[in-house]
Length: 370
Figure (cartoon, rainbow, N blue to C red):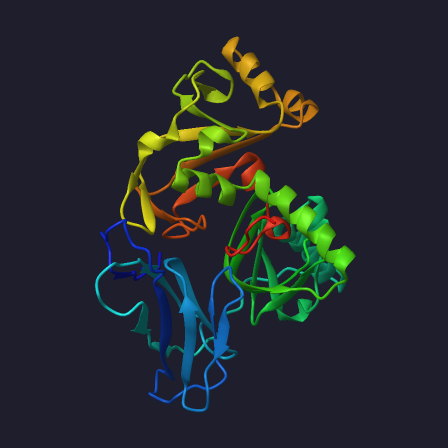
C-alpha cells in the first residue's frame, strides 16, 4: 500500500485562542523531467476549493480553515497525487494568516489494461449499469444522480470482479441534493460473489443553479441525509454531544455461540471516554473493538428490545425507521476535526446503513444545517 506523507503544522496549542487562524497553500508543480506543468487542477478533497496552475506551474489556495485537509492534483497524462495535511490553530504572537509551500512532482501516467471480458457491444452498458448502482447507490438520492461524461470511465472485469477508474473527473449531477460533483476515481472494485464494494477517489463539490423553491427542497433533503450520517456522528464525537442526539452506540461482545458469531453488550457506550483533546482544532479518537450504532426517533423502543436480551432483526429496525450501522477504527487512532474529517481515509471500516451510503448521499465537509 502506498505510503501517505503527513504534514503536521502547529500542534498542542492553547485552547484560549480568540483569533481564527487561516492558511494559504501555494507551490509549483513540475513533471519528472523538471518541466513546469500548467493547467493542473489542485483542490481540497470533499470541498468546493480548487485552483489551476498558471503557465509557470504555480498555484495558490487561500483562506483555508484549520483541520484535516487533503490536497489533490489532477491533469490528463499524469498520475494524480494526494497529500494529507494536518492544519492546527496556534495562539502565538505570529500572523493569523499562515503561508505554507507545497510543491508536487508529477509522474507520467502509463496506460495499463486489465483483463477485459465484454463479449458483444452490450458488455460495457451492463458494466456501467452495475457501476452506477454500486458507486452512486440504491437510495433515492443515489438513483437521482447521473454521470454526465461516462466516457472517462475505464471499466473491465477480472473473473467476478468489476474494476473501474477514471481518466479524468467524472461529472456527477445530484438533483436531489443540488450538487454537481467532480469525482476523480482512483480505483473501484465490486465483487459479485461477495457483494463487497470498495473505491477510493477525491472530489470537488459545486452548487447546482436553481430557483428558491429548488434551494428550499435541497436544504430539506441535505438535512435529512446529514442527521443520521457518519459525518454528523463524528462531529458530535468531536464536541461531546452524542448523548444529546438520537444516536445510541453499543459495543459488540465476543460471543462465539451467538448468531453470526457475535452479539452486542446491552449498555449504551459513553464514547467520550475514547476521545481526548489535542488542541483547539483536533481531538484524538483511540479505541479497540467494533461498535453498533442506531439512529431514529424510536431508538429507545429498540433499546428496550436490546435490554430484554435480544438484538432485533432488520425488519424490526425498518418498521420503526431506526437505522443500524457498524464501525470499527481500523487504525490504532485517528485525529478528528470539528467538520467531521479524520486523518487517513483508511481509519474507519463502515458497514450497515453507513456502509451503504454511497456518492449519492455524500455532503461536502463545509456543510452546515440551515
